[in-house]
Length: 225
Image 1 (cartoon, rainbow, N blue to C red):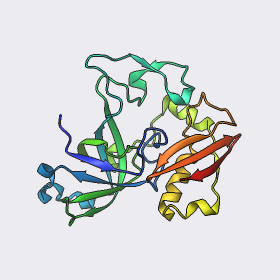
Image 2: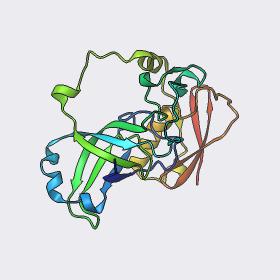
Image 3: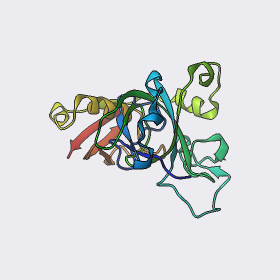
Image 4: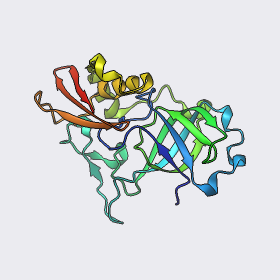
């Protein structure tokens, strides 16, 4: 398969990327198509959908061909418990393909790079290759009665962190970026086996380095540089 597009987001490294799509609804990005896929006819009717599916490449998790493991260690389980790869959304898979449901905010029809899709709630790094785009169909894709296995059980046990961000640091980001950063930090981007209250973590976001530490349930942003 060959990519048809790349997504542009404020997340330039793996650390800090939302763990799932939709968890940070204020995280905005846009999808830019390769020249051979910019034909406006390919977008006809897409404006009628509120959400779309993205199939994409875990481009930062490629392994040598044929090398894979039947079990992985989900970070949400502390990185010490192994689960079957089919029961997780780990990037380390036989075929490193990701699947995300995102909100289609708007289509920018006129740009120097052809039509752009502006989306929110994406859990993709900046520059991630996109293999395909499909419309989200609520009458068939939504399953309110579905169960979420161990992932849902762990999520119910985790309370969001309180995020403390001094006012003087906020001027470096737009209001929407501040809201998105708060959403990501509240979910605690640290691996669950790291809980040293004195350790300062660094996360790249929107061209800045965000330094923070976590004490109990409080995340303190120390610097945005």
